[in-house]
Amino acid sequence: MGFLWNFLTNIDNFQWVIEKAFNQVDVDGSGEISAEEIENAISYINSYYDTGFHPTLDQIKIGVEFCDVDKSGKISFPEFMDLLRKLSRYEFPFQNSEPQTQLTQTK
Image (cartoon, rainbow, N blue to C red; front, side, top):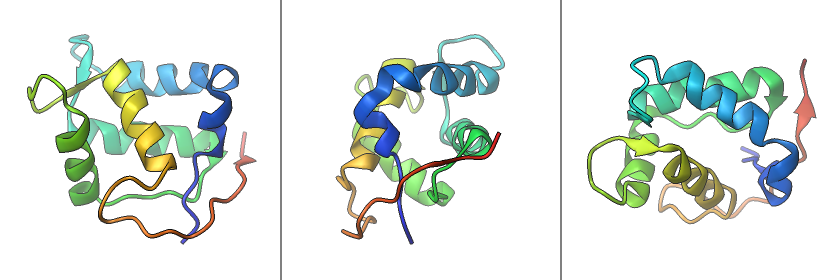
């Protein structure tokens, strides 16, 4: 299981796809997304870059608990970026310490 997100070390080059994914799933325009929407956003990112990261909904919910600063049950774009950074650093209990893999652009 090669978790991804090496591209977050150079986030400026990839923020466009992250923002696009966030905005794509934020259908109500509230500026916050739920765990289910995060799952869709990660799938959207994976459609551009093969990250090798496919968390379960339960894993995403754990991540939201860690990153949801205002405890609204949803996360804002800055919280989403924090979630992705934490995932890239294996900061969650469900993650192992396997080496990260390089991304492969799929589109």
